[in-house]
Image (tube, rainbow, N blue to C red; front, side, top):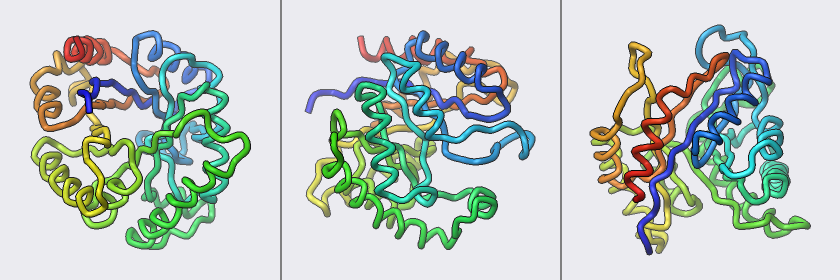
Amino acid sequence: MSERPTRIGIQLQPQHADYPQIRDAVARAEDAGVDIIFTWDHFFPLTGDPDGKHFECWTVLGAWAEQTSRAEIAALVTCNSYRNPDLLADMARTVDHISGGRLVLGIGSGWAGRDYEEYGYEFGTRGSRLDDLAEALPRIERRFEELNPRPTRKIPMLIGGQGEKKTLRLVAKHADIWHSFADLPSLRHKLGVLDEHCAAVGRDRSEIEISVGVNARGRDGQPIGPPDEKADALHDAGARLFTMGVGGPDYDLGGLERWIAWRDQRNA
């Protein structure tokens, strides 16, 4: 398999902003040259005022599908618990068609207790939520094959999470992209575990794109950069998709330029 290109993602967190501010951030991110624009799948803000402004994931993705023309779009990640798997497959297929084949289906088992409590979903346990995800993934894949029309392409599946026994086994079986927030030592270790799961299911781990979360800004709020030292080490370990997150209302993309320049240098 040829060398995967290095890619840059941005998660535009749909919190503490009016929708025109989100729409403007999407336009700026695509114009800057990001490869993929993420939202997230929650019902309340995760930082700042817990009752602040917030927008729903898949409605936003439908709008982004029409607004954008080049970048891929996705949730980082959608919560399996919030939608019937067959319905989720239909929603993903629909956004895939609206976007002209640019949707990535990011999915995970879920964790935000308030979302579950206030919207009436059974929270269960971490183990039960992972078991539900394991049951849902084949249903989603089957439904893709049964829909009319089918997706425009094999919709890439991104699975988020770091659990070594269950999550990484699901990654080996189903994922086109694996996303984690692991630091360098942890990433190296987790990739070793993923190698074992891939071998057990007869899959080459090189088929899976490795995605990591990175910070565009330091604790002082200033842009981190150039990102060479940290990013190069993660790249050498196997990461190829580097994603940073920013929130509203300003959606400051000041740290993004350096990451895109680094990407272009890596891909030259």
